[in-house]
Each structure stands twice: as C-alpha cells, then as structure tokens.
Image (tube, rainbow, N blue to C red; front, side, top):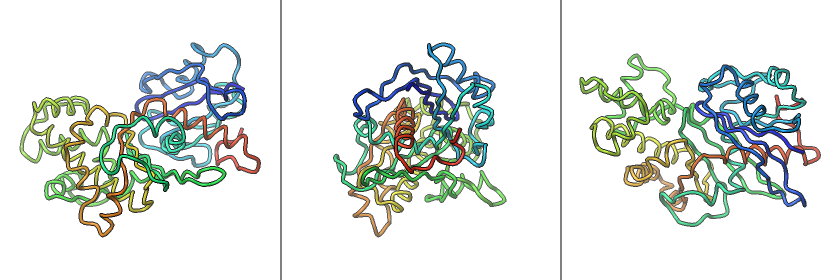
Length: 334
C-alpha cells in the first residue's frame, strides 16, 4: 500500500510518497519526495494537494503527518505553524480515508532507528553510543525535543513540549536580554531564545541594550555575519544562542540520562557547526551539576533534519497499523 508521509514544520513542509518494502524487512521505499515552503500555500491541504498533483500517479487514501505541535480534539495546537490545521478538513479536502498525526519531534525520535543515528557530526562527549535512551532536540522555527527509549519488542518514544519551559538565564548578559524581553517580568519560553526566530530576537536585544540600530533582519543574515565576524552583535548573539542551547540540552538530558546519545537536528545547526563546536555549548551542557561526570558520558551529534522526519513518521505509521492492540493516537483515526 502506498501512503503519504509528511513532516510539517513552521517553515518547510517535507512530503513523500512511500510504501513498505516487500519481504517484511521493515524497510521503507521512497517513491517521491519534495520540500515546499509553507508560506507559499494558503493551507496545509493546498500544500499536500500540490504534491499529489505533481507526484502521485494512482489514488492514495492514507496519510501520516509529523506536525509541529500537539493534537487536541480535531485541531493541532502550535504557535509556529503557518496556518490552522484541522484533521477533518484535511480528510475532506483531499478525499483521504485516514489522516494520522504525530508530533514532529516524535517522528524524528522514531528516525533514530533508521539513518538519523548514522548521519550526524560529533559535537562532544564519547564518540560511540551507549545502550540507554536517546534524545533528539532541535531549534528551528520553534524548539522541539523527544526521547527514544529502547525496549522489546519495540522502542517507546516520549514526546515533549520542552521548548515551552521557562528560559533560565545563566550569565549577566542573558539576564539583561531576559529583562529586555519581559521588562515587567512574566513567562518567557526558552524557544524565544533557542530557535531561529529566537536568534534574531537575541541579536535585536543586544543591539538595543547597547544603543545600536540592528543592521540585520533575518536569522540567516545573523549567522552569516557571525561566521564572517562582520557584526559584533551577530557574533555575540550566536555565542549566547549556543550557550543557551547547551544549558537547555543539559537540563533535558538530566531528565532522561540519554547514554544512547543526543541528536541536535534543528533546521540550521549544521550551517553553524564550527561556531557551535567552539562555543560554550559543551561547558554549559555540563556546568555546575552534581551529575557532571554522568553527562560527560553522553555523546552529542549534530544531524541534518532533512527527510528524517518523513522517514520517522512512516516508521511510526507502519508500526501502529501493523501492531494488533496498539491504539491509534487521538486525532489520528479515520
């Protein structure tokens, strides 16, 4: 059976036509794959229809979507999506019998069982994986995280909304940035710092704190200027971002003790790998904690996000459809 698999983030939608390989090996065949900018489409249904019209030659009736956010009833709750997502509307608009949905980082965690684990560049810690849980963490349009816990006959994946945790400043400069973001106090989620838009926000905050007018208008411009050392606030913004990412990653790691490794899979981390490697990430990942010696045994890699979310969503879908007695998650039934 052919089916659609998608990984829908706040910036891009990755869509594939897939099927299970013959012979019961559990392997997946990708029959077609495209990446679309979400902002180019008025709705998710239009994005998926563009793929169907260009790539699908015979009718498909089943679809699985890894989507930023969580399902509540018929609706996906997330502040970073380009449009509202309602499952009944998707089924009706596309003539599908079933739309199954899971969190996008839940899908990435399932992809650890596939090529994701072998695709990363080593950042810190041991060079080989242990046998315990693994984490996938990614700053992109937002900040996501999920845990992969090995077990028999199948691993368990625990989704999170860790990016919505309160930002905890470490340095005096970070306290100044937090005060600029929330001058009257109140809740500031960590993804407002540790994400693509968060990087731009940090840059703007640093400029304002020093009485300067921001010269850069996009996260990509900030990372490019930092790499060229052409803008001191861009350099500081990337350094602060990397340090805060280290603190956040260490905090999530203390929850799961992921000796199986941590995979940083955000949309732009690969482009700043050298800066991340030479930043305070590792020290902030380990710093001042009684479990420092344990966290030092946790390997960390940076992996391309790419098509891994699509593969993970497809793995999740085939497992849930093929396993008797496994309930389909809320919102995923036909």
